[in-house]
Image (tube, rainbow, N blue to C red; front, side, top):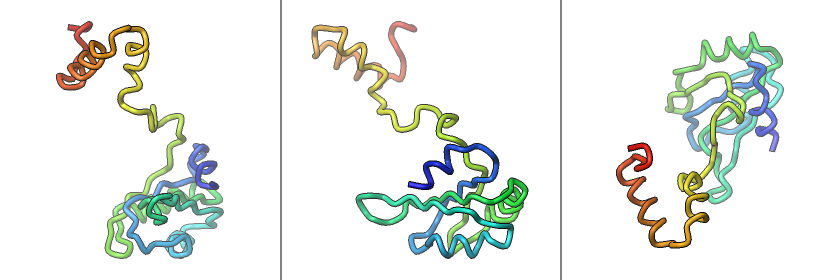
Length: 136
C-alpha cells in the first residue's frame, strides 16, 4: 500500500492523522487538508477483518512548510465529532520494535532449555513479577 512508503520517509512532509471517525474517507481528508497546501497522497490503512479504516491516516504534502501549517492548525481540531491528533509521521525504523510479540524476547531461552515446563514457569513468573530473576 502507498501509505507504507509515505510512513517510511521522514522528510517532514508526511503527517500522521489519528482519531478519525468511521465515516472519514480519503476524499474528506483531502478536502480538510488541501487549504494548507498541495496534498500529494493520502494513505488510509484498512483493517482486513472489518474492512474499515483503522482510525488513522497519512497525509503527504508537497512541502514541509505546508505540512507544518497543517499540524499547527489541525492538531486538536475536530472532524466529524472526533478530536484529531496530527503530527509529523515517524518512519517505522524510529518507532522501535513495532509488532513484535511480547514473548519473542524469551524465544531463545525456550529453545536453549530442554524442559518445556520449566521454561514456561520461568517466563510466566518473569512476566507476572515484571522482572528478570537474573537481574535480581
